[in-house]
Image (cartoon, rainbow, N blue to C red; front, side, top):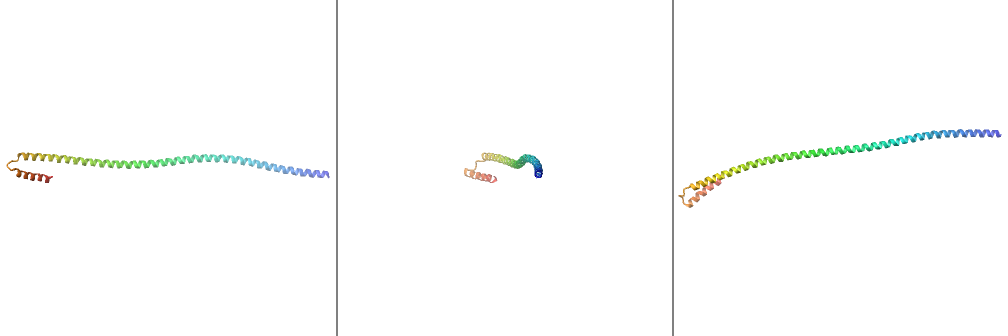
Length: 155
C-alpha cells in the first residue's frame, strides 16, 4: 500500500506540477502580453505627447494667421480712411482754389471801381474849378448837390 500511496502521491504531485506549469505558462503569456501592452502604452503616450506638441504648433500658427488677417483688415480700413481723407482734401483744395479765384475777381472789380471813382472825382474837381463863378454861392451849392445826387444814383 505504501507503493500505491506513493504512486498516488507521485501522480498527485505530477498533476500539481502540470497545473503549476500551466499556471506558469499562463502567467508567462500574461506577462508577455503585459509587456506588449506596456510597450504599446508607452508608444501611445509618446504619440499623445507628439500630438499635443503638434496641436500647440497648430494653435500658434492659427493665432498668427488670425492676427495677420486682423492686421490686414486694420490696414484695409486705414487705407480706406486715408483715401477718403485724400478725396476730402482734394475737394477742399478745389473749393479753396475756386474761392481764391472769386476773391481775385472781386478784388479786380473793386480796383476798377476805385479807379473809376477816382477818375470821376478828378473830372468833378476839374469841372468844379472850370465852373463859371457867375452864379451866386447858394445857387452853386444847389447845382453841386444835384450833381452829387446824380453821382450817388449812378453808383
